[in-house]
Image (cartoon, rainbow, N blue to C red; front, side):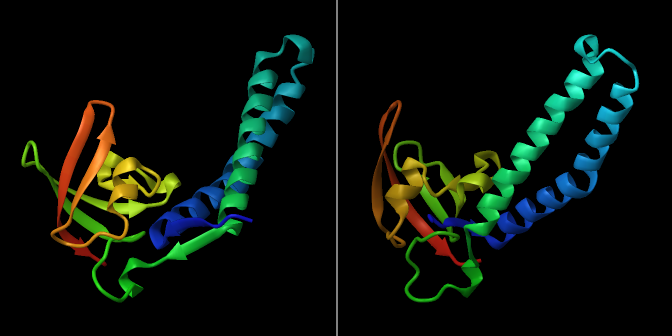
Length: 158
């Protein structure tokens, strides 16, 4: 069974979503199905069809979340030690050597990734290139627009 790496925050977010689905969304859709069923002919009942589709989505998402949470390997970057090398959970500051633009990212699990919020998926080409590097190192990353060079300016376990 393959472990799914995630940060403490990412794990808590998935747990909260699972709780919401089980405690609120699931009972609400069951109620909606019962109400739609009371309206008669199910073959032409759009409310019933929509509620059943919503129920299917909710049940699928619950199964997906339960699976991910059961395989979660929660990594707390504040508890990491050793030399400041880039690994899962750390925050890294890099500079694009072509544009001199600085970027700050936390390397997170796939489900936590949100580039606009500075959360970079561990499976992304940039993150894969950065893993194992240290401050001062330069990495080359293949992008759709060609190769890009980044210099690591800092590594933080916060």
